Structures are given as structure tokens and as C-alpha cells.
Image (cartoon, rainbow, N blue to C red):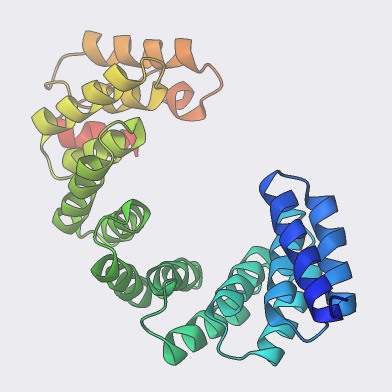
Length: 269
């Protein structure tokens, strides 16, 4: 006859299959039965934690990840998942501690690049801009095509007034994800802040080609007209209002009067 450990493995495998099908209730039931039969298997606790997290039971998920780590402190998957669950729960300090511990134990982990990225987000939320920049760059050094890390780094750099650095990151985002209208808008806004209305216009127009109903692209274009041209900006704001009449940015700028490209973007931002 199969041992309890073997029966537990069957229930765990069934739980994985149900989870892949989206049956989280069924998966949770199977994982719990596997744990009843073999409570000392860290993998099952981790998988139950993941299923509970998907069900928004963060307390339950955190408890399972902690149990997985008690049984196997070297489990990178469990420590990374614990950090994510703590971050989702709003425990930034706890999340930071887990991500850092994971990187301390194994900087070659498959999750290392994402741990750096998550650390960057948590540190940015705490106002540690330099720390966030360092973590985003660490993530990119491990995974150069990590689009979200480039995007986040660009946003932080722009917020710090490092416009050229932001432009470089947004250009990389556009290169990696050329079909994203958001990527072209971010680059367009950065170029506008760098007093490059021609480059900005090209990016906003590309965003509109990709998404003709992008109100934000029309708002950006409104700031790219030459001094004294009122008809162009007014037409762009009206189009933005047509697309999204509830957009407070466009509503607030219906009386927009550009005096220069720089002033235009100051008004917009």
C-alpha cells in the first residue's frame, strides 16, 4: 500500500492541476489534505500559501509561507512569496526584510531580479529614492529586458529631475515594448520636460496610432504647439474631452493658453 507521504504527494499534484485550471477552492482542499497526511513537506505549505494568496486570504498565505520556511529556511520560492504577500498586506518593513534575506542567502536565485524590483518599489514608497534607484538598477543588471524595472526607474529619475536619465530608460521601454501607448506617452512627457517638442509630438502621435482613444496623448500634444497657436491646443483638449469627459486634467485645462512650449507643459503638469 502507498505510504501517507506518497498519498500526500498525489493530493499535492492534484492540487496543482486544479490550481492551473483556476479551481482554487478545489486546489486548497487538496493541499490541506496533503498537509494532513504529511505536515512536514515545505513544498505543499508553499503551494497552499500561493493558492490562498490568489484567494486574497493574505493572513492564511503568510502563515503557510512562514511554515514552509520553518521547515526549509533555504526555500527561495517561499521567502519571495512571503515578501510579496507582506507587501500586498501593507507590511513594507516585513516585505523588505524578506526580500533582503532571500538575496543574502542566494543572490543567484531565479527570483533575485524580481526581489530587487520589489525592494525598489517598497523603498520608493518609504521615500528612499536612492535605495529604490539602486534596486531597480540591480534588477536590470540581472535581467536587462525587464520592462517594468526600466519603467519604474524612469519614473523615479524623472521625479528627481534627472530628465536625461529618465529619457534613456523610457527609450528602452519603448524598444522593448513598442506597442505600448503608455510607453510612448511616458517618453513623450519626458521629452517635453527636456524642451524637445518635436520628439514629444512624435511619441504622442505614435501613442494615438496605437490607441486612437488615448486622451492623455491629446493632452500631451496640446503642449507641443508653437507660441501663439491657440487653435491647435484647443482642438487637442476638446478631443481629449470627447474621449474622456470625466478627465479632470483636460477639464481643468479647457481655458489653456500656451505662451511657450515650456510654459505649456508646466500648465499641463
